Image (cartoon, rainbow, N blue to C red; front, side):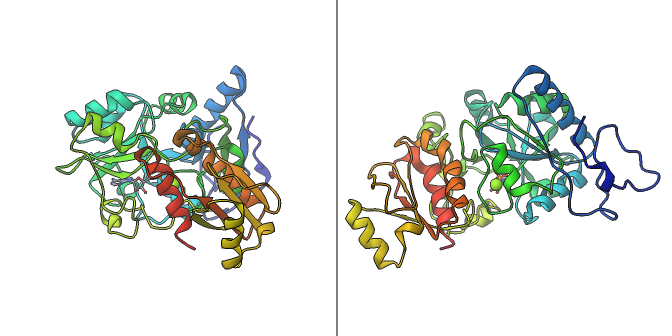
Length: 372
Ligand code: AMP
Ligand code: MG
């Protein structure tokens, strides 16, 4: 049933092609594949999407799947060749490790060499959900997944389709966000397609992501539990359960040595194509004055605000984002994507509050802005 352009797919002689599965042979056909979009809006299409996704994963292919955080590009976490396809499709540096997604305790046992009481406590409170725990790894996890580290990042996602795929596949799935490396993480199937169309065989459309930014990553391999990446499960909530928890140095100041603790947490990340700046303004005249000073044309500038709203003209677009950290996170990437479509000269973002609950949003905005 898959809408596969089989005419240009040439399986190499002697290879068995699994039914309804697209076989991409690197030697004969390296780059372009037909990308199918599977819908899940009724019971029949849901079931078909599940079958198709599991077929591709079983054949060692990558599939874009919805999760509650952002869309993920999934592959069999125990198959190094399949995992290599994730890096290839995203153009992701091999030094940036992947999060492994599980959907039952047996899969956790497959991946983690040990389990501590803090891991058990955090898992009990936040799983399934947008929290990733870094634990010592078992040898079965290929080095490709962990960038050679002896730890593995584990998450039990809550999205029902993601869970169903993992359970039906009966094994853990490595899945980074389904975008090109360093670009915006997608929160809808449309945004996945805009970046990965022609590079992956299947995108499962499971609607918009309810969390909207990547998971909080907590490292439990050292003597002090450490937040490597902030998210909507923030330090305030975590420290109520684990008072000793700390923020990794460099998390909110990405210039400072975080790269060693958490490879992949680079200074510039999650960036739209337009230049992005985070700044503060009092009112519309002061915003316009600032833009003039910086040589920005209002007609080519998108403005993001949550508290001080300028009127729409003369700006290219004014995005009013809810003044609430969780609602802001949900809207953030989708709205940046909309702005990018207009090809603005610049995106100006009103400085978000400095409270802990905003750590995840602030971290993503800082990284998006850091290239400019
Ligand atoms: P994503 O791009 O959402 O897949 O994010 C994965 C991020 O999780 C990586 O960039 C790392 O920062 C972090 N991560 C994954 N595995 C590990 C690990 N074993 N140790 C420390 N951080 C990790
Ligand atoms: Mg990512």
